[in-house]
Image (tube, rainbow, N blue to C red; front, side, top):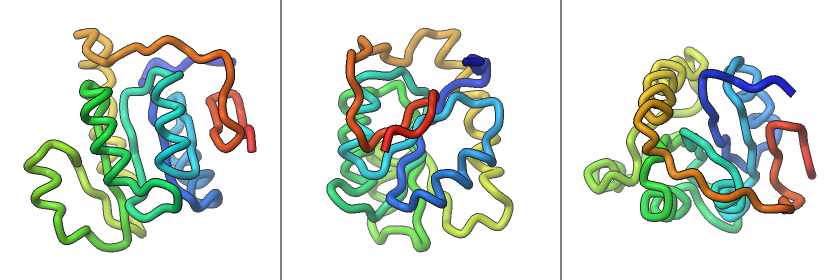
Length: 152
């Protein structure tokens, strides 16, 4: 398996087709995918990522709850929220540092904002060593996809 020098991104959405499309739009990054916030937390506890790109509304755990937990447990991981419309409390979420960037769906220019946001984030985190590096778990939940392929 080839390792990426651009960094790693955790894509979180309950729409599998969208997850696959997002993955194709981000060549060169090490990608991890999860179908909900709880599965994403499992990834975060077992894998090193530089950026979380999550949908707002999902079953089991929504994107804001995921980002709130990630901000507390993994403060060095950057956080991007996406939805078809901005949540009403987006200004508060940004001010609190829960959401660093919002990308509205559908993206007219596919993830240009995220592509511009990630290289500097990953470079800074790798150089400064500020991204928390948790120990890897020996097993992964069935609804999580790693860089090595789908595990659904």
